[in-house]
Length: 265
Image (tube, rainbow, N blue to C red; front, top):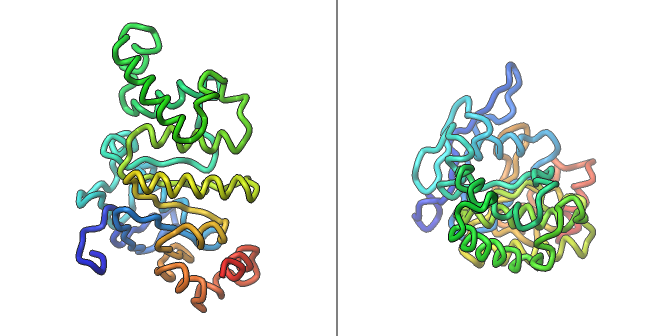
């Protein structure tokens, strides 16, 4: 429970994930309050991506539990979680490169309903097709991508593909969106634009949790930051507290990210 006594929208309790003799996540607990932008950071190999994989259903936990809106979702399939409102983007592109921008967003609107989606592509469900198009186009407009609706995804530059990946996730109407390194490969202007989009997504009522290496972006975007090291909780708090914590500085010491932690001040 958070400081106000409210039930967190997403929570891990004693989360552990082992791969043979390797403990990637070690008795890790955290909670995300509804309406927050919550960062998960840590040095390379800290266990962040494995934690995301467990939360989003790609791995079952070896021990511990994950709760979403008070329900134990430990080990549930990603499609089930998406239908419940827990949706994840990926560091690498998982877009259908041969599809149009619009068709990729249609896929997002119908996660777990492949047959209905195929019927629309084949033209056998016209009313649903029109409704899906209208909602997909509205999602593209939110990201400023509506003029590219008919463009093959393979023609889009990197920054636009990253935005489209978020559009696909938002089209699934999530309650919580898990963003896996949303600013990777972006220049400073693209990063600023993406940060503004993340804030707008939160303002639409979507709670956001993100893994990210860009410390300046994390410090300037997140309400709360959880820091992992060696698979376990190191520090958690508001950016000002995390930025100046001696344990965080020591964990990042000697890495490129250490400068980012201090420079974000």
